[in-house]
Length: 262
View 1: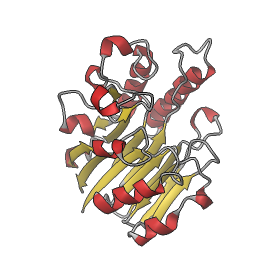
View 2: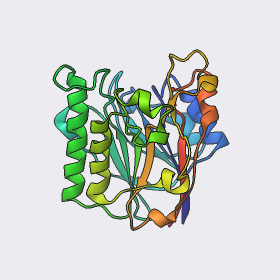
View 3: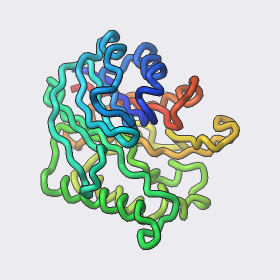
């Protein structure tokens, strides 16, 4: 079984329903993982998605904030959901596909503007969330699993437009990069995107603040596709649909794709 998966921080699934439908029509992933849905589950606009064949969904919702959902053309059942760091936020959902693959969809806290937990509670929450993720995957080693989402960290020097200028900017600080690395090491997660595209600048997020995001190109790779080592060799075809950042009323993130032959 071959299937294509995409992850996208949509920044309000109801507000941006038209571009979700556009992506589903034009790119047709088998599985689409959305973050920052900003909607209770019962208000996610399923009718249009179902009309395109996406009749399966697992989700956790929250009015106005957070929220994660997995849409699928492949039969899928809910596997689990965790409230890491006990924040009371809808930031994780996992679904199991009919081939036995579990897909974890995460929206890691952004962490605010100041990379110091002593003066910025949100940064502390982010680090605690990552610590809980690490501890969970150490305790319960996953297999045949894919982890995707807006992890809100660009770990590599070529995952940001300027390593030197962003070293003290939340999302690329050494403490965050180390914390994300600990999550990855806890279960031997393989970064599928960088397995496929090992070299060169690669971004999935461009700030709304940029007057012309495309020309300035001051991006960061905040959105990730990982897989457990037992299926990582089955991953290929990774790409960022950069054009989606320029669609009408866009998210500030672009979708990231990968295909798995399992």
